[in-house]
Every structure is written in C-alpha cells, then in structure tokens.
Length: 212
Ligand SMILES: N[C@@H](CCC(=O)N[C@@H](CS)C(=O)NCC(=O)O)C(=O)O
Image (spheres, rainbow, N blue to C red):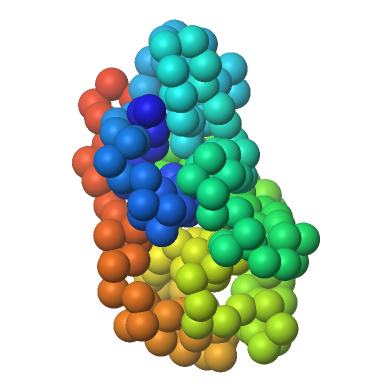
C-alpha cells in the first residue's frame, strides 16, 4: 500500500502514528506529495485533491484521514485496543480534525494567498475555532486524554506537533499549560512517536500559486 502525504500535514501525521502503533510500517510505503502540485493523477485517487490518501491496490484508494485510520486499525485488528470507547475517540478526532482544518486554513491564508487579498476576518474566525478547541481540551483533559496509546491521544499529540511547527510565536503553550504538560509528558513516555511529529519540508517548486 502507498500513503501519499507530506511531512508537515497534521492529518498525515495522525495516519503515520496509527501506522506505527498498528505495526504496519512494512506494509505501507510513504510517498511525499504536496497537495498543491499539479495533480491529474492524484485527483484520480482523491477527487478532492487532498492528502493524506492511502492507495490500497492498483485500483482503489481511500481518504480522508479518519477513514484511513479506521481502515488501518480495522485491518490490523487494533480497533478495540486503540478505541475501547469508540465514540469518545471519534468525538476527540472530530474536534482535532476541525481544529486542524482551521489551522491549515490559517496557514494557507498567510502563506499561499497574496498579501493584498488576505482576509483578516477570515483568519480570525479560523483562529477562534483553534483557540476554543485548545481551551476545550485544556479544561476537559481529565476526561478526554490519558497517557495510554489510544487513538484520541495520538490525534491530539500529532496535532499539537503541527501547532508547535506552524505557530511557534502563538501564546498557546502559555495559555493552555495543562494540555501542553500532558503533551510533553506523552512524548516523553512514548519516544517512538517523535518520528510522527509534523516537520518542515521544502515545498516543491512546481506547486500552484494563487495569483489574484
Ligand atoms: N478532512 C481531510 C482534510 C485533509 C486536508 O485538508 N489536507 C490538506 C493538507 S494538510 C490538503 O490536502 N489541502 C489541500 C487543499 O485544501 O486543496 C482529512 O482528514 O484527510
């Protein structure tokens, strides 16, 4: 199987953590693909043009990250172990994916959109989703997260690595200390997850640029 992803993608990092924990690294090759590259072949796999995508055989590919994670957990027989309280896990995933949508959108707004057409109101609205989400996790930590290898914990840890990477100046570590203490302890307890952190990576030169 081939996973198309990019090292900085928070959604891709979540899938990579599940691949590792489910011991599937030998069965899945990771291919770097930036979603803003010319994409005729890629749209055949995912009409939405988004990463991550898991090509499971010569004809079939699955997306999005939530479906890919369930597919890997299911096929490797790990669903019950990683999601003993399935709807709790899925709720946290929905929250974190929504925050990741907001954070990626903020990044695109500032990085891909030309300065003169950037919209501060749009950016601020995405930032609200991100900060309310962080606040929710920070104040419900006892009932949402633990130090165990569970799907919801992997969703949050990989997402926070993306926030550290892309918003290093933001006051999130200062404002949500309970959450970040949990995160730092989690990474210390599970050093093998270091490789699942979001990483900066040179962007291919042939990506599409927004002109207007
Ligand atoms: N709901 C999707 C979101 C994936 C997503 O937004 N990926 C970003 C990269 S981190 C992307 O491919 N963006 C390209 C685009 O929006 O056109 C998932 O969970 O897989």
